Length: 169
Image (cartoon, rainbow, N blue to C red; front, side):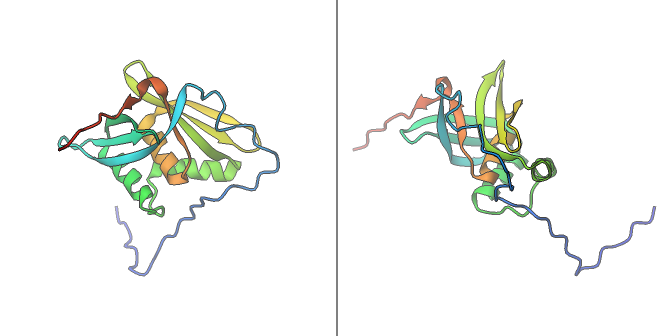
């Protein structure tokens, strides 16, 4: 099989938009909908474990924490890149979500992390011409998408732990 070489000056440019699609009706998905049992968190730390797995620490404004690990190093790198504003190299699966949202005029407005059985899962909340909730997806991918779109990450309160206070002399 003969595969042609791509010239050095050939540049592929993808269009990634963090702007809201042109939606004609009002959103009915609200950040507070059904979230009395959740708290908004931010990513406090992100990295790779000595076993080569992704790990992160989610934290609330009042110091409660939720550590998360055992996801791919590639996902951890994507999250870290998105935090640094590197939004032009989107992995294929996230690119697919981006294109579907763009074409269907959907906007991801929040993700909600919870435990299902032994795994961390997430619901993704979209709004647009109609509201859509995608249920039971990998939490790490949901966090990556939330970071890409700069939207709230919610975690069930029962998963959060108060940060230990360290007294130093």
